[in-house]
Amino acid sequence: MSNKKITIYTDGSCLGNPGRGGYGAVLLFNEHRNELSQGYKHTTNNRMEMRAVIAALTELKEPCDVILYTDSQYVKNAFTKKWLDNWLKNGWKTAAKKPVKNKDLWQQFIPLMDKHNVTFRWVKGHSGDPENERCDDLARNAAGSLDLIQDEEE
Image (cartoon, rainbow, N blue to C red; front, side, top):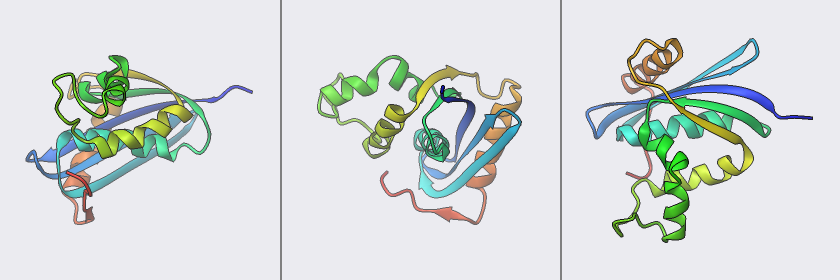
């Protein structure tokens, strides 16, 4: 039996960077649609982009084939340009020998990427893609909500 084929759109938002932030994700499977969002008290845009993907992939209860659309080059390139693999080989140091930022979240990606077959696709933000725009709305609304939680590591 083959894996379910899921399409995911994600976006992160920060009102100030750093500042209040939020993420939004839309998961599509056949006629099913699931929207996720959460706001944070003090965070960065990159962390919200990452949390959107982590939340969406965590939502999947079995291994899936995923097409994941993000407007974050940071997230996409970590996988398509093998940045994460290199950081792991270099003991969580960048090519410039500096500590990798957001290591706590990158570490959360590893089991998710092992579980799912994820293909990253970049979508230009604010370009009229309906699902990307929906994720942007979810992220901005979450960042502006009263239901904000602490982003543990900054």
